[in-house]
Image (cartoon, rainbow, N blue to C red):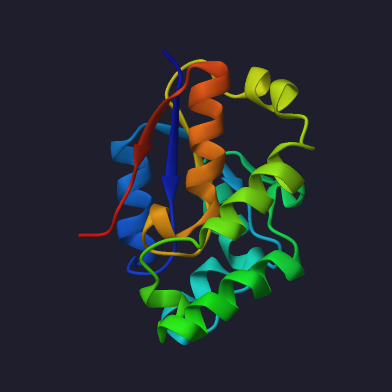
Length: 161
């Protein structure tokens, strides 16, 4: 059975992030961010050029799948709920149902996932990456769940200690 892993940026150092990828036998990193930048000096390693260089140096192929990123409008829908609840992006515990419904319909419902799924490595795992610490607070979990239900992937969520 093929495996899809998910991993964020928050809560990780670059070394710990790579250790988690190695432990999960990740053979491909799939970046599903719209904007590939992260605020804060402790996460500068996850900015596009630095991350791509580090992943390349580690010998892991990297793909940016912007078509799987939420639109700015969808992100703002989630941010409004975060504001209402008084939580920040780095401390969010889950996604608002309206966001989940619209992301599933507008992004996953329009994406050509079969060719992508077929092209993922047969051995090891592929990792969907975004920024949120917890997969439940990020669209990457929705993609992973879709790959599991539609194409039979096993899902594993990599979390910082």
